Image 1 (cartoon, rainbow, N blue to C red):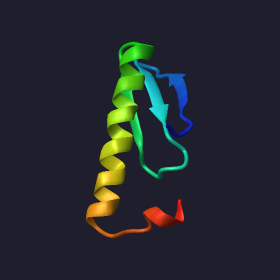
Image 2 (cartoon, helix red, strand yellow):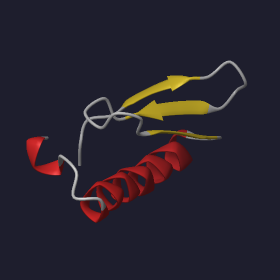
Image 3 (cartoon, helix red, strand yellow):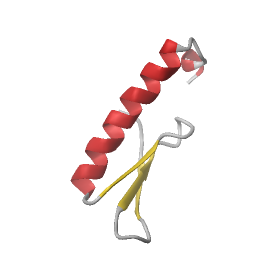
Image 4 (cartoon, rainbow, N blue to C red):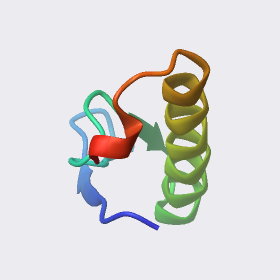
Length: 59
């Protein structure tokens, strides 16, 4: 799995970003939820790039 950054949001939710995948960000009520959410977001991000034959190989 890629490195992610987790930090508390102003609304009480946790925010998580995957810096190596532009725009790949998620949130959750707990740290466990936010980690599950970012795993799904990363998978979907990669699927989208592959579906559009974009620059995935450059990462």
